[in-house]
Every structure is written in structure tokens, then in C-alpha cells.
Amino acid sequence: MLRTILLLFTVLAAPAVAISQNLVPNPSFEENEGGIKKWHLKDHYDNKIKASSWSDGPGWKHKVCSCRNKITDAMVLDGVCNLDLVGLADSCQIVQMTVHDAPPYYHYNNAQHKISLTSFISTELKEAMQVGKFYEISLSVHFPTREVFADEVLEQFGLKLLNKKISTYNIGIYKSGNYLGSDDIKMDTWQTLNWKIRPLCTMSHLTIGVYVDKTWTFENGSGGTYPYFIDNISIKEVQPEIKEDFQYYECIDFESDKEVFYSGIDSTFIYFENNRIDISEEAIASLQSLADTLNKYPYLVLNIEAGADSKGSDNEQLSKNRLQAVTAHLTNILNIPEERIIGCSISDSLAIASIGDGRSNWKYRSALLTISNLLAPQKIYRDLIRSCKTSNKNAFGRYFRIWSNIVNSADIIHILFDPRLDECLPQWANEEVMELLKAQHNSEIDFGEVFFLDSLYINDQMTRSHRYKLKLLTGRHEWEDNLEFSIPEEYGSNNDSSNLVTLLAYLKDHSIPDFSKYGKNASRLAPLIINHSLDTSLYAAFLPQFKALCLQGEMEWTQYINLYDRYLKLSGKPQEYGTQWVAKDENSVVLYDHIGADQLNANREIIGLNPINVDRVIYFK
Image (cartoon, rainbow, N blue to C red; front, side, top):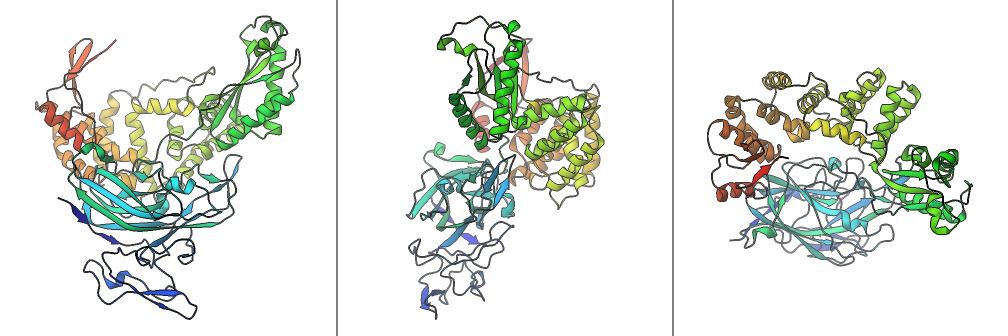
């Protein structure tokens, strides 16, 4: 049976409201003095819509339709629906949206135009969407052709479903798990877009707009505005014939941890004449092409391996001079920051066989340029560690400020917990990190509380996931030192007990940290620390609260089911989600006792987990 969920529109801080065609019949029009049509609603309204939801007050009554919306907190644009760009649909019951090209934004030695001011319409659902049910979402959209903007706008348009009303200023990044877009939008025509989803939490709000990627820029931006139009939004609960057609929808709005980088460049050789270091015209063209790529993708790091003419022991200085020549051309002529280049002269460590004069042998008389495994924040963090250990204060200050400006903001706190910097991190750097963390935290929550929770999470994970996080800060390079480290002994088993005492003391006066207010790591903190104990009374006390947070989209389901299955295991009962394993022998483990494969996998399916083979045996080497 098909059941339509009606949408009650409330545009964030905006005086105009989009009204669906089936709710307000037959709008009438009249001409004003300037020849502009103005929309009058008739006296009869559908009982789902209140008359007060439509604003026709001073300054608005000459708008052709509901075409002014709340956009990002940074800016509100003025304007009317431009009927020269788009034909009327459903008697003008449409909403005009906007994308605005901001002035140039300075980003790691590159002046770029950022598309960061964009309108959103936020809608509260008449009936919330529930876990375990199936929904079809559709809306109509029209993108007119304009000179100001390119086709990238189409790639960024979409919607997000949320568990509560939030500021659109904080959702302008589309690379998150709960963004729904389309790769088949066409220009200059009304088009209906459709999505099929299975929510993983109870959801009550829908937000539609152009979700701006952090790396999305326009080279020819000039502060222009681009209008587009949406209409006929609907959400329906359905009973599907094919469940697989419906994608799981993650409620927690995680931004992707992965930076966008380019990996499609081939190795580039710069060839030299015998015993020479000057750059040829052919090489200059190759370097220019490479520099264009580096400028387009500002997180790339470049490796340069310079060679000599014959055996390395005879030509060590020549290979170094060639490395310097290529590096100087990239930095001085093509303006590539030296912090994005890692170089070595091959003859320093590797002897090169003698070669002839044929072009086929020039691969030894060359410099090889390739894109590194490292990203720029990782390369600069390596330089930061080395300058810290060698007490090079000037270099450390330079690297620290570059790194703190380009690294993912969520990673800044980890510098305070890096054992490689324990004895050399200067006090001013500690203070500056704290200021950066203060600047990015949710102002509704006391910073000291947020920092305490994040620090407790890192302390708990120091011998677990934090080791991996520290390795990601420096990455793994093709030939450089990988800066290995060891975790201090105080982070042993006793650490779990002290963390539990600290958590329980905190929870006496505070609620369980949720995702919206405290962030991803803090929302994981309570279930992780309790899971490290063996006290089943604690499990029983907190599990209902954790489940309630999962249903609100404020905690990950994996945290709940790990703790729940562990509780069942410690209580001698069969597990229900398949997260607990036991030893079969010295070299293998099998799944702990469970409720049966069919029911276990049905439970997993509801919360978006793949089915598992309950008979699987995992062997250790």
C-alpha cells in the first residue's frame, strides 16, 4: 500500500514558502502598475497549510512567485523569479534558488574563486521517516543556461535528510555520506529526479540545494549569481518488490575523511645533454604541464629523482645539480611551493651503469618526476617533526602555520598527542592549537568540555585506532624515512580502568555526548569505554540510552550492536548481530553462539550491515 507523507514547508529564516500544487488550488494573478504579475492565494486552503505560512508582506508582494529563500548565514540575495529564463510550471508554484560566486579565496598559494554562497530550502516532514521502512523521494528541477556558471552546478545539486533542523551554513559540503544527488540532470528543461532509500535513523527534516565541495572553484568567477528552480517535492513510503533497489541512508552527516587528489599522471622524464644541467625547451613544456596539474590539485606532492651520466660514484655532484636545476625552475619560474617537492639525487645511494650516446639510454641522464604517495599536509607534517627534533625554531614555525592552514581541521588536535613531538613541541604551538580548536568548536557547548571529551577519546584509543591516525599524519613515502614511533607504556591495560572512572564521573552531571553537539569521536566515547570493561550492569544501564541515540541519528549503530552482542556473550546468551568471535584453536576463531543465520542477518539488514557467513573460520598466520 502506498502512503504519501505530506511536507510542511518552513524555509529557514525566509519570508516565502513553497506550496505544493495539490495543497493550494487555482492561484489567481493580477497586474500591478509596473506590469509584474503578483500572486494572490484564494481564501480556501487545504487543511494541511495555514494561511500564515505564506508571506505577502511589504517588499515581497511584487515577487512573481516564492523566489527568495534563506541562503547561507553569510549572505541573503535579493531578486525575483526570472520568467525569461524558465517557463511557468504548475501556475508558478515554484521556488527560485541561487548559487553565488564569491570573491577570490586564497588557498595554499592559489587564488581561487570559491562557490560558497548558495541557497537552501529546509522542510520539516509532516511525518518522520522510520528505521526499517522504504521510501521514494522525488522533486522537479529546472536549470537554465547562463554564461556565468558551468555545468558543475548540476553535479552539486541534491538533498540531505536530517534528524532535526540545522543551520544551512554548516552543510555546504556535499562529499558526505547522506548527500543524494544525480548524474543525469539536463539543462533548460523541467526534469523529475527520483531516489529510493532505507533510512538508518528516524528523520524529520529535508534540505535541498547546491552542496558545495571544498575543492569546487570557478577559474573565471566574478561574483555572479545563478538562479535555478525546484518544484513538486514528495516523499512516499512504499512496500518494495525488490529491496535491493533501495539504498541505505546514513543519518549521521559525516564529512569524508579523504581529500580529493589526482592520481592519473604518468611519470615525466626531463632529459639532459651529456654533463649538462640546463633545462631544454622540450623539458620546459613538460614542467609547465606538470605545474598546471599541481596548481589544479593543491594537495599533491611531487617526487624528483635526478640521475647522472654514468656510475654514481663518479657523478654525485652532477645529479645533485640537476635536482637543484629542476627544483629551481618549478619554484622560481612556475611558483610551485618548495614545501610540495621531495627530491633525491640517485647517485647518492645507487650506482648507475655507464651508458652510450643513444636517445634510448637517456633515461639515466634525466630527472624522473612522479606524484608522491604523500599529500601536502603529510609532507609538511614530516618537515614539522624534523624541525622540532632539531630545534630549528624558524623552520618549525613556518611548517606549523602552513600545516595548520591546510590540514583537515579534525586532525589538528592530534599534534598534541603525538609521541614524536613529546619533548620538543613549543608552548606557543600548544597555545595556538588550542586557539584553532576553540575557533572551530560548536559555540553552544563549552570548549573545555569538548576538548575534555576529545582528549579522553584519544586517550582511550591511543593503543588502538590512534596509532593508525598518527601514521596517517605523516603517511608512507616511497623512499623517505617513515618516522616510526612507539606508544608510551602508561597507555597500557590500566588505562582502560582509569578512563572508565573518568567517564562515569563525567556522566553524573552530563548527558551522553551525541553527534550533533559534540562530534563523531565524542559520540563514540561512552560505548567504546564501557565496552572495554566487563561490568554487565553498566551494559544493561546504558544500552537502552545508546539505542535511543542511534534512532535519533546521534550515534552509530555499530557502537550499539558491538556493546549489545558483547553484553549477551558475557551473560551467556546467543548474540543477535554477529560481532563477537571466540577461539576455535590456537590458529583460528569462529563466530560466537548466535540466534540463527536468518534472524541474525535480518537484524543486520535493518541497520544497513551486510550479511555474514555464520560458519566462517578466520585463520591466523
